[in-house]
Length: 202
Picture 1 (cartoon, rainbow, N blue to C red):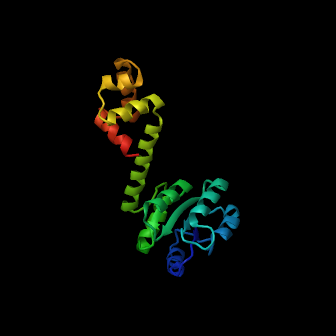
Picture 2: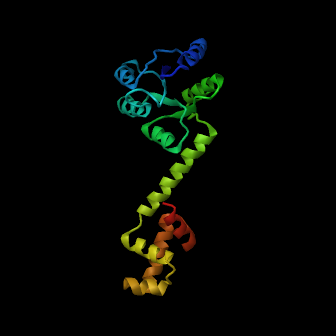
């Protein structure tokens, strides 16, 4: 176990970890730069990382260390609960995410969970991460559409009928229907209403 954060609560959490014989506290760092310099040699199993650090952020530290030693597991420990901070931490390689107001005993449970292959995080944060991933997945499906398929979908969203779309694009009505079939498959939808809604939810 390796514990790295910088706040006035450090001593309290540090004492909880040291008092538990399931953990071996290696070292504490007050900034990301020192952690980046030493963690690759220490190679701890777990690092508790605060996002709000002087200098480089905890997220930057996670990203840098993960590129050097991918096996090190990070659990973010912070006051932040906004979607951007959560998702950036996960994208950087964080394996878990716990808020600072989490009771110490729950934090220790989270560390055990992480050591056993889990991804501990609060229920609210888990929902935000899932929602962000789903939104990104939907956007990626839209990006898979060809230029012609996008043109068909835009005209469809403006209320044009199949024949009107065909006339505007100088293609056959059957071709419009074929494009729509491909659009439904790529967007994983069943009808034009779902396709249009997904387009505008980007």
